[in-house]
Image (tube, rainbow, N blue to C red):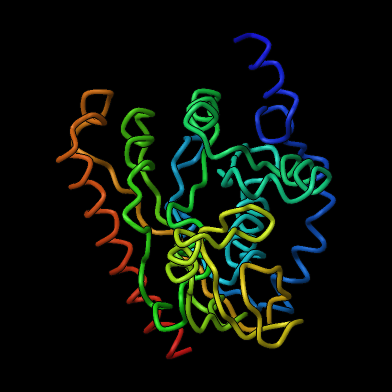
Amino acid sequence: MLKKQHLLNNKPGWSLDERDPKFLESLMPWFSFLYHYYFRVKTSGWDHIPPQEKVLLVGSHNGGLPAPDMTMMMYDWFRRFGVERPVYGLMHPKAWQVSPSLAQLIANAGAIMAHPKMAYAALRSGASVLVYPGGAEDLFRPHYLRDKIYFAGRQGFIKLALRGNVPIVPVISWGAHDTLIVLADCYKILQQLHEWGMPWLFDIDPEVFPIYLGLPWGLAFGPLPNIPLPVPIYTQVCPPIVFERYGREAASDRQYVNECYELVVSQMQQELDNLVKLSANS
């Protein structure tokens, strides 16, 4: 068991110590250019982040693998609170398999493995944690779902907040869905073909298989990397959501967890509806 844990700690994403404030500082000029001139970000609500307190940031993102709204949200955090105030982002295990060198850079920027062990460790250290529960399905959701909060029913973040005794601060965005246009997700069709005997490409189940329009491919099939189109992005930090009960018992209560989940989705959807109206009038 100790040997297995030692091996995990040697892999990117399995240690909080990999986060490098100096590396983040070196990225700030690049983020600044993208923020001010490429995506022309408009943001609000940052006064909802409690000073010097840890929170669970829960977001809905768009725009394919680059996730430009997520990147711009993180830039806003760093320029307001400094790179020294710790925040860790949970990243899906499959994202760490793309490239060892890229995985190390992502870890240096503050990403950690999306695993309960790492999430709780980050909260116990006093850091805030950023999670996008919808994962790839949210990231590549079809364009007609651009105005919807979509978490695919995943409730693990609720249990994390309850056991970690932290408020949830929703972070929403609108506009990044136009950095590439997702026409449809064909994953269910491919999954059926796989059950009939067709192997997965590279023996990897991608979880999503979008068809989209975007750079540099034009028309693309599958979760390929893309270059985001330069469209305006609107982001907003929403008021904290504090639940009535916390602790292990609350996190083990299925009905209560579901009620908390529905509350978060409902409030985030309301905030997104308002953001859509605001962006349409600006």
